[in-house]
Structure formats: C-alpha cells, structure tokens
Length: 221
Image 1 (cartoon, rainbow, N blue to C red):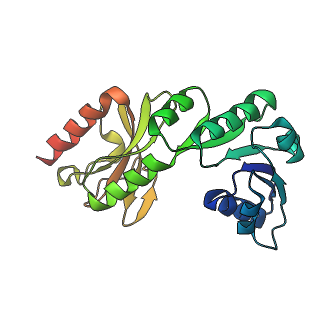
Image 2 (image 1 turned 90 degrees about the vertical axis):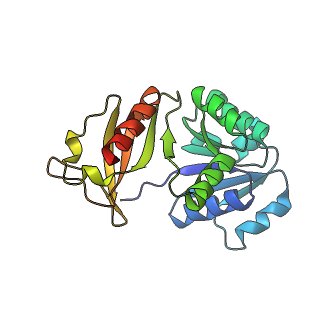
C-alpha cells in the first residue's frame, strides 16, 4: 500500500521538474519552489502539485510550500551555495531529516556528506559513468559512505577464481556483497561459485582497496 508523503523541491530546472512530475505520478504531494515563476512552465498545465515563487532558503517561502508537513526536501537549484543553505535551513530550522542537495563541486560534496547532509555530486557522477563506458576496465567505485571509510566497488572476477565459492574468498578488509552475472545481480549464498564473466561488488575499507586489487590480480595470474 502506497504511503503518500509531501516533498518540497527547490529549483524547477530540468532535474527539479522531472523529479516533481515523477513524485506526483507516484501519488505523492509536491510543492515546487523557484525564484523565477517562468520556470514553472516545465511542469506543464496539468501539474497537480503546488508552485511557490520565491527564494528557496527564505523561511516564509518554505512554509508556504508546506515544509512543516514535508517528509523530504530536495535542493536542486543551479547553485551549490544556495542548495547547501536550503538544506541546512530544512534540517536545522524545520527538523527535516530526509534532505538532499545537488552539488556541482565534488570536493564540497564530500565535505557536506561528512557533516551529515546527503548530496548528489552531479559532475562526479556523470564523469564516473562516462569514464566507465569509454574505459570499461577502469576500477569503479559505486558508493562511498559519508566518512569515506567504506566504499562499494565493482571489480571483474578473474578466470582463475572460477569454480571457487564466492563467500569463501578471504580478503582482509573486504567482503563481496553481490555478483553480477549475465546482466543481472544476485546476492551470493553458500552454494554460489564464481563463473566466467562474473563481476563482483565488494564492500571494502578505504585502506584495503589495494589489498583487494592485489588479491584479484594475483588470482588472475
């Protein structure tokens, strides 16, 4: 059963409008805030959410958007400073826990993640995925926790490990959490063995990445 929530989206560009339309289509209530009323044209004439013109970090504007009843806030304007300020106001002034800010500067994104503000670093995200397509052998990092201590990495499984049980692979500081096989990912169990062409997703401590890569390289030699 769908539980409808209210979401405040600040920024009605391509990301904000797409997000708003998707949420409304999924049965949620949405208020979109933008300082330029003309931006609301992206939502179309049939948009069932509310539109609030104003500065996204202004408390009165956020209250007009229903932030006091909101379960989440997305700050997706085209400015890093504005998005962080909006996120902080939502968290610190209105007590909204589920807040996400879009950040263009990857270094800033890392800093704010450590401060507990969830961010989406669009430049880094896009660059990583382009690199993975033009350099498919490039080691990939799928996710990093806010403290940058643990990450989820994608690695090709060497042929020399074919036939070995996945959960019996012992790498200090790393643990395999999923295997992608023939285009589909599975959670390995005690019977799962490595097959040719498998790709592993490893939860690994930052300081153990070299050990993981050495283990896989040694296994393929």
